[in-house]
Image 1 (cartoon, helix red, strand yellow):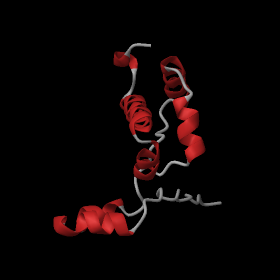
Image 2 (cartoon, one colour):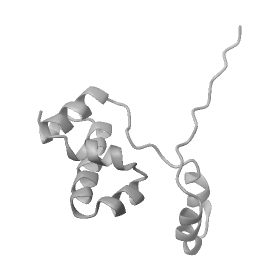
Image 3 (tube, one colour):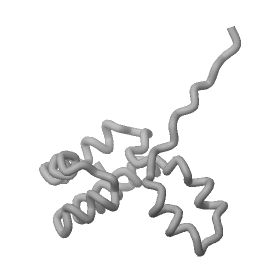
Image 4 (cartoon, one colour):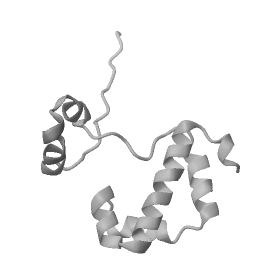
Length: 104
């Protein structure tokens, strides 16, 4: 698979997976902390070959593996001097999906 054939979401997934993979080779514990990974997730990623990463990214398609924090808007709206403190004080959690109700 050529990198030019990837969508923006697939490219982002591949790049972040690669960053995490390289990070785990240098500092497993630090990388797990930075990206909110469990050791088992990091070890599984480390066991994957480059072609396995490409296959995963291709199979996932247009679904992001790395979703924004639930407090992203609050961080954006906060004074720049406070953002790092607020981000550190509140661990990142994904934004919950909002169910859309349709009229009966």
